Length: 122
Image 1 (cartoon, rainbow, N blue to C red):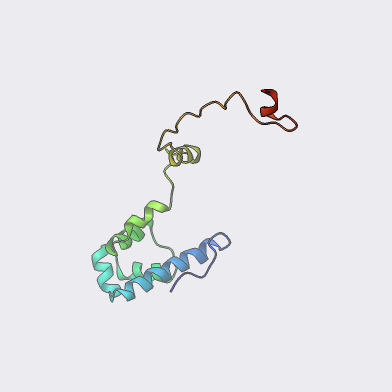
Image 2: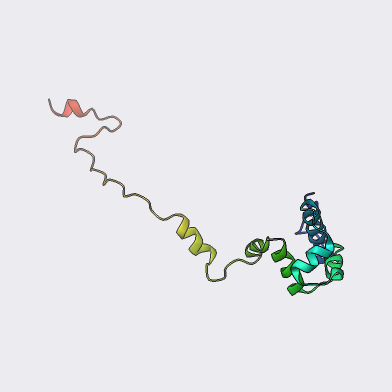
């Protein structure tokens, strides 16, 4: 089941509860018991229960559970790389890929309103 709360408006308690439900849903979808997940993560079964019910758990326990579920790479999107500023990123995305041919100057004779170029030559 997808989360149904707006993380920008929700309280931290609601967000933790939603994350816990998502962990529980993923665990059940993979047919893993709380006991087995706890053994794979190296945490207690009670830690899994607290996490899934939205109660307070340690960050270390949370990361261990994510690693046991093989989804720890998702943590990379939580905090952006501070060494890359948004303006630098925009510059990287708009790097020139090709050179453009130089434009030739317009011929000396050109058309303007009210002037007929052919009439000047006669």
